[in-house]
Structure formats: structure tokens, C-alpha cells
Length: 153
Image 1 (cartoon, rainbow, N blue to C red):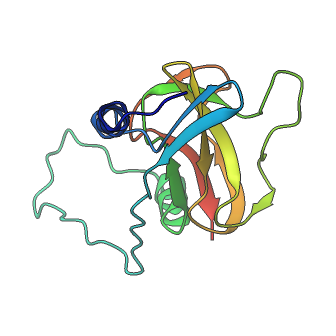
Image 2: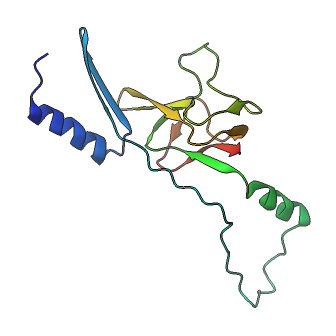
């Protein structure tokens, strides 16, 4: 495979334009892999939420159980989809899933695959912790930014 700079530049542009994190092309015994580093954003302080002073009479007060559930979710970190594609929790049908609810994962560990444009993109966790919920369904489409999993650090 003869590699031309124009070809590589087009691949890099495709990676950026489609918000992909990795692009891999193989021909025979040669391969090109282009990876874009993910930006890791973490917040340690809870964010303030504005609450209106006057509440309309038609608005129902949330139950105590709903408030407790929201408070419990505030410490959870989200693994989101970096692209539009199809979510897979295992490398192939019939094989063991990368992770499941209740399993402990470490930062950098592959937690799922997103198939986009016939490319299998391994999604790695940016944090260590315990998987509390897998929000996406195996084999179903996911959107950019959609929450795939909730992790308790």
C-alpha cells in the first residue's frame, strides 16, 4: 500500500468531521491507525441549579423518593457516546460483555464498542469505579453524547 500525504490528510479530516476517536484501515499486512485523544473533563464540585422563587399551583411537588434518587445520582459519572453509531456490549455475538452492572472497571478499560461507518470503535472508560447502570441497549443505535453507562467512582 503506497501512502500519499493527501490520503492521510483526508483520513484525518474524516476523523475530525465525523467526531470519531479512531480510524483504522487495513490492506494485507499493512495498516493505518489514526487516533484522536479524548478531552477529559471532570468536576469535583456539584453544580448549582437555579430554582424559581414562585412556583405555579399546577406544578406538582416531586415525591421524596424522586428527590432521593436524584441526590444518589449526583455522584455518578457518565460514559457518553463520542459518536453516532450502533452500541455493542461485547466484541462479538455470544462472547462475554466488556462489563456489566456491578462490575468494577478501571480508567482506560474498554467498556463497549460503537460501530460507525462499518468501523468498530472501542469506547474506553475515562474513570475507575463500579458500573451502576448500562443505559444503552445492545445492538441499538446511539446518538452523539447519549449516556451509555453510569459509573460510581
